[in-house]
Length: 410
Image (cartoon, rainbow, N blue to C red; front, side, top):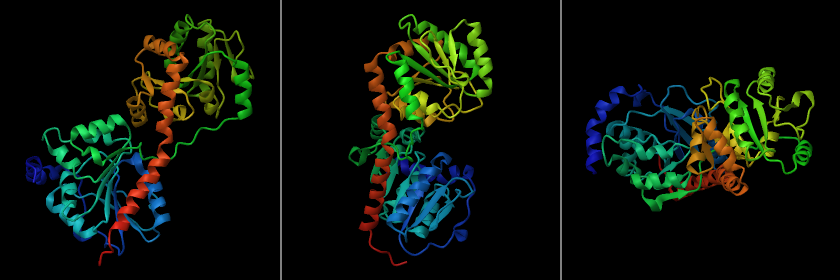
């Protein structure tokens, strides 16, 4: 046994004192007959992808049971038939052995970077194949247990298969000790990112009107961000005098206030809600109508994602909505609640972070170069389109493991 793991086992009972209380093994549900897949999915943000994965497995194996473990007492909502929920027990040798002896899973899949060294190491003697499927947080797995050097390495080396979301995550996991030959860099396991809809006739008409005019978008911005956006736009227009800025307010009820600011800035603009088009003399198009974000993302090679430059209690647009439609993402430092999405785009070189209006104007100028914007947009598109292929591969890995496992006499 590795020395770091032996030390961790010694510390386990003390660390477990601060763990979430769990039911004793005597109160666990009875293990059903047949094959059972164990999915550890503690993040609330992963519930949708867990549901899709369970549904896909059920299509292949109607009699398959799935055990979903979390850290919370409340079961995930809408668990399908043949699914059981349990709180993961404390990460101690005794609890890990009891857990595995009771459930006897044919395969274990971790959908989180929050590793449990005792439980993971206890699976090897029972010949339970383990997988780590990246749902956007596997990068964090390389940074666990820094207080005990070597523990992350010994834990990661227990996984038979690791699917990584991007090359940066792959390098981080391999650097932390995962076996490189066990890592497949395929993308993040996630539900399919559906492109926002729009009227194709309207898109064609506006595209013809704009012709070769350069365009950028400020999507879902707060009124407090407007001044920085306008400063950046005015500065960028020195290099590209025909540049058009499309502004979509976060709250359409604030459109009049946006218009007042544009008036005070003497910024020529036209307004969507009044039936105006982005005329040649307009420097800004105030897109203050509902349900047309898909149209603006399609028309704009570059999109600043609003409510990220200044703190806002409301959520801004999902950056994947822009990326899926070929618009390069620019954003400020406030990333919640889409931090995973922003981080994934950043690791792939598919987005750009700006801190103030000066950096924003530089980003706008840089991304007006078609070759630069195209390379970043392609990288973003690859991230958004990989989810379906990764889901197929994950289902294949699990079903192959089930096929290789002989029926157990329960």
